[in-house]
Image (cartoon, rainbow, N blue to C red):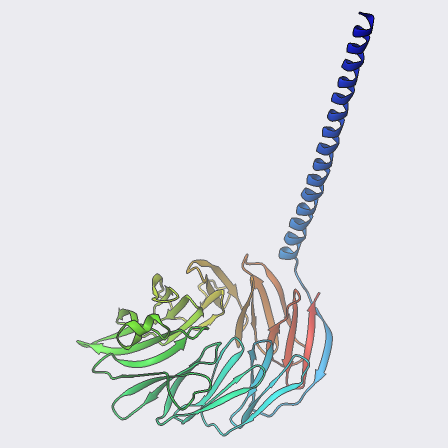
Length: 400
């Protein structure tokens, strides 16, 4: 009997020890989880702090990180072409990388130059001329020779080119595919008596959608018809690839563009219109204004409309809208800009002697001058590091 009691006590003791051991293991595991959660919370708090400091930080100057000498012909202009720089004039064009190395060079003679870009592709033409030069950021792609005077051009990121050409009584819209410049992939005609006169044309980055602004007069009223064409498989099922259209009375709409493959916008005398759809675009939103629109700037994320400011303290006011067709805010500035560019959550307004950089919270991150006459500003991938293209150099700067 004593042996049984002794056995039961030993068994109870062992079970108690095992239970205490499991409790200790559980507490150890929970303490480990708590430590991990504490570390994660601390890292998140640090990240939020750094982000807030980054958004609130004001820069007062800049350092030149590197500088490369260059020379440029009088009358030449610079624009961004992908990560490279496209320099063009009436006599020719060339593309350089960020280190100043010439990637390609092109010679031509053009009187009234037109230049359109889309990501890494560009098209150069002579207004009323017969030639379109197509090139990427890495090489010349080809040359298109037309049979009629060119009035407007557009290029997609895939190298597809659309052009409006003038005939005696008609206007023609041709679309060309890379590598098959002699055989237009699309031909359409227009006249004031039928669809109206095509005032502007633009292609989506992927090249499957084309948007045309037609102007016409109906019963003495000036109207604009915005028409979308699907150049892909969907468009093959409808007449003339015409998939949707929208008519606006008593308004001229000369400015149309795609922000991405399923978002387009149009700017008229008194309104901004957004359209959505990767196959059959539909009207998404309209914003009316009673002020004169002085300038329009855009990228894949934002559209900015510049007006004279109603606030006596500032010269200009810019309304900014995102690619979801929603207004982001109003931004005031005094700089006499030559260009405004959007980059992530900021915009940069600049001229040859100064610039301002403002984020979408309305915080002015930088407001200052340049030591040289600046032709082009190009944001780099590093935060607040920029490329300044001047008449004599390509400078990489870091704000401080």
